[in-house]
Image: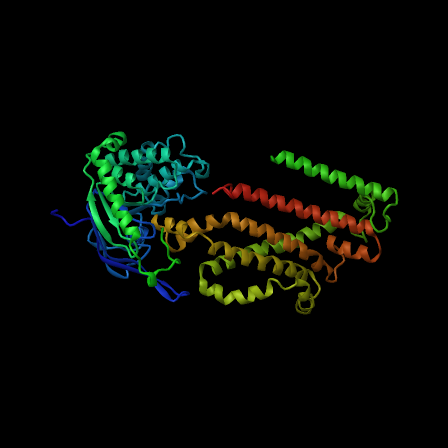
Length: 274
Length: 256
């Protein structure tokens, strides 16, 4: 790689204090990861390994205890719309309509309507939300809410999109439809995506590269390049021989990590992060 | 069970009890002096509406009570909501006020009557102040609690979209707590309305609360019952009005 990656995490350590129990939890220890511009990377790991903590650091919700976290060469500042975030639960604002949710950041930043209106319209088309612009978000299904959440994050044309198990709460059919929608939308805008999941198939279908994390304290134990060309079709990919092989090998790594004894003295339930 | 069915069942229950009560009164199963039947209360209502009670027309008693309660409640909302918001948003400020609020809130407001009279005399100020104190304390506590229970993930979503400081408060936290704020206002109004009787006991000569207490000392149980029906019915109607306001201002209550 000639240019340095867009996102760099270098020897990152993150500790959480638990004052009541008078001990510390080490969520991340010696985690290093780079994500190139336009790349789609999935973070995969056993539950409680600190996957979400990585996103929190990049979003600016948390600061690393040690190590370096940079985006485009600059240290991460406070949360901002140039790092779009989609959570597992669509944290939409129920007092705003679909269109007002999508344009929230633009209006807050005082952007002219002539700028954000066409963009919002484009995203509404792309996310299949036409006809629902003025609906109340609490009337929508779970899948549609997540589509609004993605559009809301995407409208600010973020440097990167952080997704924290965004389809984890959806049923299998809706999840697949959402994965396909996300890939199709990304064909049009080459966004950099860091996507947290515990679903191996989801990671293989969506990403260019999979970073597997260890059990707590989390670090990257293995990186796997996903060899499938884009655009991808789900039924073709799952039928491939290499798909099964990759899945088996990733599963073996995950099992090994989940079985690894964790730092019992450092353990704390108070800061379970996912 | 749907809403109209619930309503009909409730209506039937009220009608049934009223009928049983009427029969109990007419057959002297219950001494009418102790529990006057509904028909007598209706007659009393017509009499009082025409002739007034102790020189004051019935509607004026009600208007006076409503003015005291609503005025005090409006002032309590104007003072209590901002104070509660500030306590919830600024933990330091909250820590300063909290002991005083928690001490005063469960205190029976009747105990304050001698002090209030001593400080403010026996005029309207004392009565309104007593209702105000009860309602405002409950509003402050409820509002502060609502602010502190806004989910972390929702605040994070707001920050990630560029809302910080005052903007976060104005465009994310405030609308978020609106449904809970209405619940607090409804509960607080109930508390304020309850304090009305106590407030009108302070050397008054009008108001529904006063009418009930005064009629009691003359054994006019029909007037007492009428006053109770008016107090209960008005409180019920005002709560429904607040509920309607909540459905209009925060239609997502309980759904998101």
